[in-house]
Length: 109
Image (cartoon, rainbow, N blue to C red; front, side, top):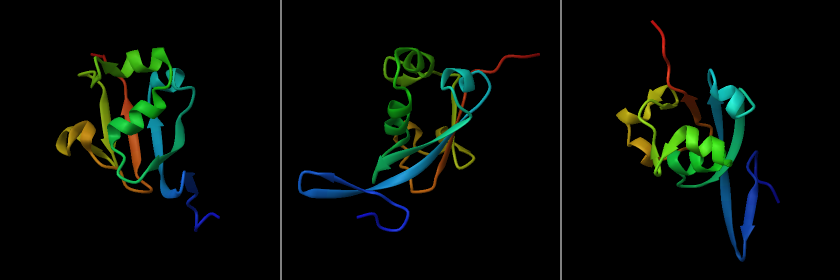
C-alpha cells in the first residue's frame, strides 16, 4: 500500500521506499533523452552514478555520457544547482525531491 506520495517496492520480504528524483536535460541531450525532464524512482542511498546508469538505458545514451564507466570530462551534472564536482562527484548521494540537471559539452565563441 502506498505511503504518502511514495510507492513501496517489494523485493522478497523486504520493502524499500523509493525516492523520486527529477532529471532535467539541456541542449542536444533533450534529443538524446527524448525529453526535457523525467522523474525517476530510485532507492534510498542512490547516488548520481546510480541515477545516470538508470537514465542511460541505451547504448547511445551511455556513450554520450560515460567513457569507461566514468563521466565524460565535458559533461556537466548538477544536483539542486550545485555542480557535482563540488560535492562528491558521481558518488554524491541523492535525496527525495532532488533535481539533477545534465548538460552536454558546450561549444561557442
